[in-house]
Every structure is written in C-alpha cells, then in structure tokens.
Length: 335
Image (tube, rainbow, N blue to C red):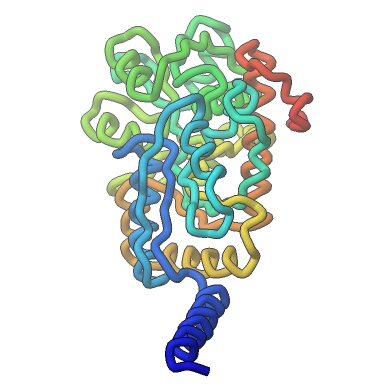
C-alpha cells in the first residue's frame, strides 16, 4: 500500500470514529433554540427567558430564545417549532392561550402532539374601580344575582382564560354579568378605569400596579387559597362560595414544549434540567416578585393540564359561535 493510500484510509477511519462519537454523544452537544410563539416582553416571553437562563447553566449550552409571534393563538411559532427536527434542539415557548389554534383553523393538530413543561402562571383576580359600591366579593355577587345582567364585566376576548374564569364565577355563584369582551387584558383594565365597565377579570400580575396605585380594588382571587400580595393577601373567592371548586381553578399555564416523539432520553435530560432550574433562587424570587404561582409540572401531569385547557377553551368558543372548526371533528372531548 502506498503512503498516500494509507494516509487517505487513515483519514476515513478517523472520520468514521468521529462521526460515530458524535452520534453516540451525550445530549445536548450544541446550542438549543426556543421558538417562542408570543412577542418579547410578555409573560410567556419573560418566564421562558428566566428559566432558559438557568437551564443553559445546567446543561452547559446556550438556549437562544427567538420570538415568532403571528397567526392565530401562537400558530406561526408553533408551526415553525414543530416543523424542525424532533431532536430536542428546538423547543417551543408557549402558553394556555395556544390551545384554541386548532378550532380557529390555524393549526391542523391537537395540542397533545406536544410534551409540556409548565413554569406556572398568575391567578385571575376579580376587581372593581374604587367608585363602585362593592367592598367585598360577596357584595358584588349578591348584587349581580339580584340584578342579572346589570353589572358590566370586562375581560379579554371570548374564549380567553379570563373570560372562562368569569363564566366559571357565574356558574359557581349563580350571578349573571353583562360580559363585555376586549382585545386584551390592558384594554379591559383601561375600560374599568374609565367607567365603561364595573368589573374586570385579569391576572394578578397584570393588575398589580393598578391595585397598588388604588386604581382598582381587588375583591378576590379565583384560586382556592388567599394569594400573598405586598404585606397582606388577596382573599380567595372560594371561602364565600365553596361551589366554585366545581368549576375552578382554571389557571394560566406558561411554559414550553417539545414534540411528543422527541427521544425519551432527550426529554429526560430536559426534565431534569427543568426541575433543577425551577428550584433555583433566581426562579423562585422571580415568581414571588411577579406574582406567579410556580408549577414545575412535566410529562403526563402537564399533559392533563393542557388537555383540560384545550377542552374548556375549544368547546367554549364553539358554543359561543367563535370557532371555525367543530372540536368534535378534532377529537377534543367535551369538558
């Protein structure tokens, strides 16, 4: 064998060993991309960036967050993330608001194609403006029961989590509000402060500054326990109306996901890193400071959360005439 042929053969052998080593290497070997379905600065974006920073340290690679807003209910970002290799190097930053994409005709799959990692969410709070007469949740509810349809209550659009929480409040108490939909939480809160509506339902995180500034008066949170706020607490509505437990809590689910068919060993690595990140002081402090209830749910437990959200949101939209696709045709069970 000539010297040139020997060298060429040796190069091929070494290249083969190198390729084999890479194929057998430990995940992750390179940077990960988080395709985030909403714009920069929102709750989903902020929560993901905080947790991704911790996971990057744990995994020893960068996790680059790339915002891909657009479409309906996060459909542009979801389609982008799902179209890439299902190898764990692309994850999708999303939230509970994505679960209506399919019934709105923007996503041709159910949400159970994802394997979820839930960071958490901020509970919804029922608030009124200071010039209204109601000082407690009970006063408001009993008035709305005695005067059905008179009290104007605002939230973001029909089928949103805030609207569903308002519906649950009605179902659990027997009150009847005059629902006024708005294009988002901020417009509904502004409407309350200008007197267009009497009651607003959005999250504690979104209302915090308005409550602190005395522009809104919080009457109760729609979760089973009092919620810490400043030096005190926001009272739970469940204490006065225990029947709310039949319909609530229905909470935000902010986090990220990978396709279900990503290799299990890769998902295990991500789950371990996620669990460790959720226990860091920086994540816990972020949650406390910004009024988020941290979750940390993964796997089957997280999947059940999104199955429930998809069912509730999809059928509510369908019954309101706001869905383009029948949930039954997608195999989405009724709640």
